[in-house]
Length: 258
Image (cartoon, rainbow, N blue to C red; front, side):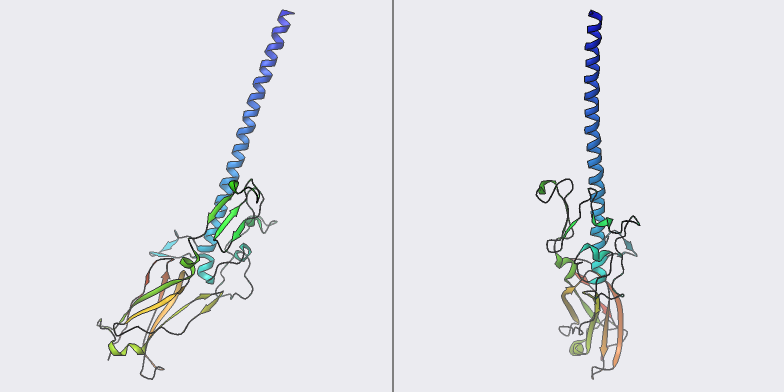
């Protein structure tokens, strides 16, 4: 009986130890699952941000090449669906999506949901993307928040300025009124070329107001005859408009100002 009692106690100890180990293993496994879901969600949220504003690390010949949906469309998407399906009214010239693709053929909108199965919250006004993660709309302490940009102005309202000179580096002087600078850029999903900008004075300095979205846009300078119809000289460039920083484009025409 004494031996049996010892065996019973030993058995209980073993069971208790196994229980502790199992509980620890379950807790560790739960932690691994949560961390895996967190990593997957934050990675996917970053891809959504890149789809909207572009990946600044994609550079070719010293210039950034990817400005995302905004760089092509000149506007923030109304919803994340716009990143996969062309919005109504947008031109084929501007929309170059899909900017996000589904990973599964049988689930075309999987990119709209986080690793917990919750739909991402995209707030266009505050420029954030939210995942409820393991919480709910009532538990913000558990949310994952990712900011798209500091403000929409750095994405959509940038200025361009520069100087226009002739072949020998002379400024236009009193002839500055015969110069015009035009820029073509996307606006609400369509290409837009506003009326030409005139240099501000005889120095040849021009400035385009802060209405230009980030992206690679076509810009040109035309020197007209006095009738402001016939072209005397013409130069066209591509300008890489970086968000929130001064953008400069100078023109050196192939003629001499009269």
